[in-house]
Image 1 (tube, rainbow, N blue to C red):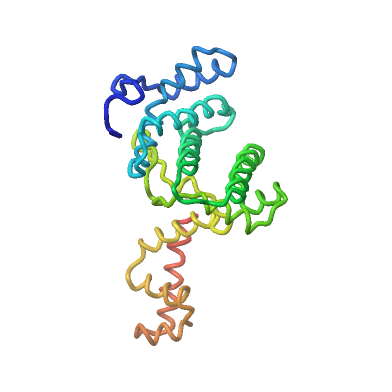
Image 2 (cartoon, rainbow, N blue to C red):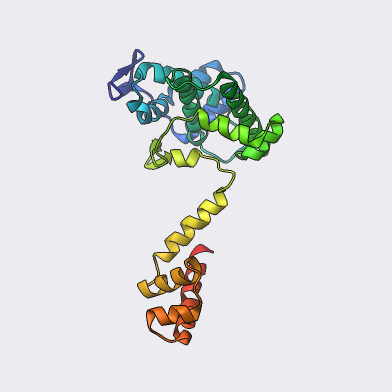
Length: 257
């Protein structure tokens, strides 16, 4: 059903596909009150909604219902997109479409979350949207809790309670081969974007090392061993360990700077 040609009475094989320049031009007109431009912008991005609902195909929901709910998120994206920000419209719209669908699924979930906790979660989500606009980034859980005057742990528990399990690496939208994954939409107050990027960069840099260099850095910086202990384990002199370690660190530093 998720791959059928017609959904909600719309023939998906005939949907218009807009270029980025066309989207920008229509957004300008729509924000200036041009209703035709707004309508064309919405219909020209329905493929985005179709792409997003593919990731929810195993939830047992009617795809027509998910499509209609996703369109609400698309309309919000059209009405609130900030043209001054250097971001593609699809990058901004995907989280809004996903958010609407998830709210729909949560409201119809067989798992019962206490009403008070659900209400707190919705307040937190609204505060998150508000702070995102003012901070121009995704707020931390601490910032959301402060905004609402609530306990941090209560906010974290409420948000976790209404989240459906989903793979972090599940693609939710693809645009010319450039995919947006669930992981891209996640905010984490502990593992920030910078720490994730650092780990990814270091991991990639480590792959360029020789097996011996990799082993030396692992023993030194992951297992906490001294150069003397490493030299005894590997069977070469401490001077050689020092030289190899220095060269390996230089390679890693060069890769991540």
